[in-house]
Length: 639
Image (cartoon, rainbow, N blue to C red; front, side, top):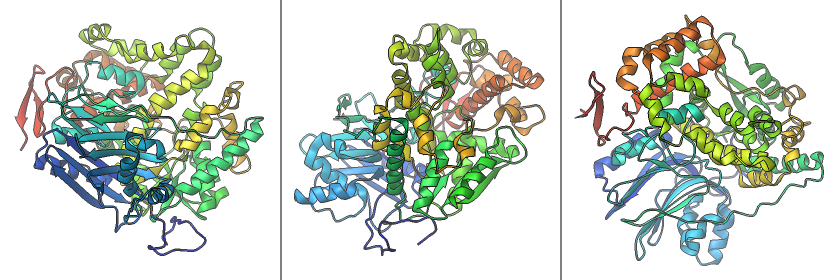
């Protein structure tokens, strides 16, 4: 058995004895979308990075289902689409309760020969219809093709939105879907036009939140969403019932912490089961340290991976990661990223993201997952989602007790660029355009106004329902799959998210302290110096790296040069951007640095995405969008 591999039972079992689970994949397809065979072939090839171990495609009259596979379990099984008579399913993710579902379906007369977890899905749908997702416990994005009577396509994602799914609806009523927005450009020509407000949305919330993407014609599915698609009709939402989840005992902080620790131990144990090597991502903070410590109890000597930067930089967490790894008996891999390589790494990173994301950690994240894969590991457990669930962010704690405009302060804290600086960077015509739209800032404020009596609940709704899936989980999914690594986040397990929602507010945030119950749950397991340390962001020290004389600053000057922006960025005032760079050069600070970084990422992403301009007509897939000196667009057939 490979290091880091764990199977259930007290002894090493053979392949035939093992209860095999699933895999990570990339899925795509359409109903009535009119994709040509060459489009389908190229889409599968474009998604191969997330599924290098297999490629499947099934198509018929007016429909197609495709998948690429990253084998985690049962490499000799699991061909997609899974089938049960006229029902076919393509699936990306893990169904953790598939054994119980398989036994239940067997009692109902269903025989499922394939032992991969996704193989239960067609029979489950056949048995329960649209309510089949209410029986699933896992992380998933899936598509069901039901060819009985009137054919229909059913798309669904898990409760937390761990596995993303995007779709495009054409003018004829056809619908195409894919695990990544860029694949829809190949499959159906979507994604060549930006929403007019896309740049402002990005600078306000660091990435688009909710179902809207930066593209006018691509929609992201929301957590717990199920859509029913029939040819020629708008997608119909199916309202599924929320699963009942046991609450933690909450008589005292200690009692709740004991219950949470037991719950996390059980879920980490479930996620440690794989026929591929399992590792952990260890930042050195509380959340990843707790997950790594629990995983080390399941896999003695577990390998864990930590990113750091060559040289001496502020907020280096390497010492904390080493302390935690020693305490757990874990084998720590320090992945060292040379800041001089960031200009080389950034284009790859923004291409993998699918949409622009202003978090500076993105470039490090991709490098980290590549290192995980190169070291021979296919599965990695992470501490993602703990801050959102338990009130760990400074902005959340401040908003809970703030007087005055707490909602406005919270929304401003989400931004990559403060409102006044955003306005100063915009071209006057873009500022005028935004005055006629509902901005992302206005939408968030509308959700929070009038919620004084339940601030933490209102904030948690935004953090877990909007920000976590869009800004956090999609980023992790796209970058991990670009490195062919399956990420399993224990904090996104249904039992944990449900228990967190039911905890009294004071056990999460009280007296200016966040994650109280989680800190208590880590007592005795995580070293005290790590458990009680002041929280700091797990990110790139961009303020220190974006200074004159560094490769990153020179690169930003080049990409954001006025001559470049006049051609590619009609939303921006090139002179204002130049003044921002001059200000950062003269007196570097965190606000200016993040603004420069955010603009740099957006413009690089725009280049990698074919340089779509806001409001321009889309070019069909297979075309390259080019610009004349006036900024006018013409589409030329790509060679």
